[in-house]
Length: 258
Image (cartoon, rainbow, N blue to C red; front, side, top):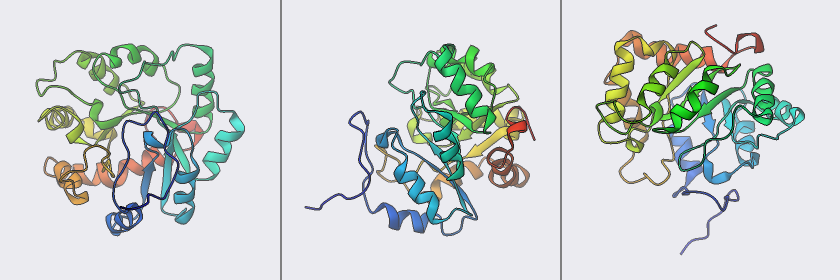
């Protein structure tokens, strides 16, 4: 029997990590020049653990936090000063928030003014609800986990809305976590995007620590899954060029390409 130490977990969490996180992280990132840490859903909106991690290597790390939409501008400034470059709502299994309402529209412009992107994790018909608002979002948007496709045919409910979103010049996509999509669906989506030039605004993510999907996962295979589908030029762009374009931005470049 062991005693778990670390950050407080939100009661609404869908899962939590297992294993020695600090040691795994050091091993996984040993060969990385820089990285972006995602605040996982199981920590809720308490960013203290994320900010502590960013403070250990501020020259190498940036972060994506989870916040309450009522977060004031002063707190956003504090997050930016600590190395936060984006905000993420995880909508899987949750209602789509009313992005057209004043609260969310205020947040949208507060984020854009600070060059903070919005990373969205959603699936299926949620994309149809999100599409009209994300198309008009004033800053950059990142679609997490390739939009969590639910069928390799890519004709599942919500797929048309997702495709239209991914064609917008301010919308990026993160190729990550194929284990969270239907079998072969993530690879099919990846190939489809690459065939139409989707690599121009594509990023890679490891999804570590693979909450609820830890069995049989290894950090290296999260990368080889992607690179097996890429030419050397595509790999250079997605792994090296695109992260700088998105995460090293000024407020005047929050929509479209730099």
